[in-house]
Length: 465
Image (cartoon, rainbow, N blue to C red; front, side, top):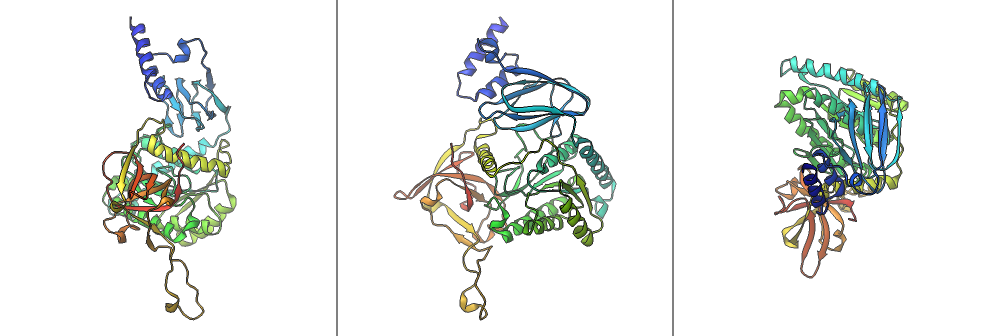
């Protein structure tokens, strides 16, 4: 009777307009077999046994999700332990690795673009770094609150593109959270947007190991909208926002001894030469980083060791090997990843959220762009000097059809002059501009009025498909 009832529930749920992968995950949690197990077709289920200190590197297929569960032993994904006998559903094109310290058996259901096992990983060196950071956190907690020694590790992870910076950051954060700490994650990579959408820098406390599927929780992020996917668009604005974020965190740490002792992990961009190197140094100084982890770049390691230690001999600069599972990504792949990140913001990683279409009058919104315009009139410049664009100039934007498919940030500013120094509440996506009726239609994560009428525009666009 119970099996017939469960089967009936499965039939009903599968007819609902809910993503198939999420339905199957819910049903499996209650013991209902997947549809492929009860019908005529066969499911692509396979088991993989992992030896001690081995991992399987997986790239999910382009069209369908992949379900995975731990059958025996212990294993983790980017530092987060897998729950036993619980199906996790990974969306298409997702890349990850399942690692085990002592051995494990996992089961996969679905198609993969590629998957292979290996025992050649840098995990031992990574966990050794974690152990050192753990010791520093404990010493910071035991120190008087107002002393310099009460500051926990401030770790900044640097390296070229596709060296595994975000993966290492994720591991260090998850391992620390597993030990009961609440470290602060800072993401300065505007090209990918690990905490929120690309074009932003952000910070958030990490209270639990980062979910392998859902990613970083978004309950309390502190977000500043830069508006572009590379710092080269407006280097001065990027520096200003980094400084604003660092100042806010510094004030928070001053009033919270536990957060101060837990420290932070800072993820950076992959631009490491010229101005990019200058921005890395700027971030190290601005956040008062005391540990610099350099991935896969001997030259960068040597330069930072010389330049950083010259200014602050108390900073530890450490070179680490990148994982062999890290692969180079083309510009086209990066663009596609950015598009997925924006879509996830509105629809969720499992496509299970329902954003809302809203309509506003032109007069209800004030849209601004930062940068551009003349810094000073020619008459005010010295003879022979050239006028240049002001990188921090706040310019109002006329609402027209050019706003179609643009992602706008909703600022917390109360006045236009506060926009640059204010963090943002979230983002909206413009789907239609009616010039005749003077109305704009936009997609928002939730219903209701926007928390502010001040919106920020950059060069970030998205074409919903």
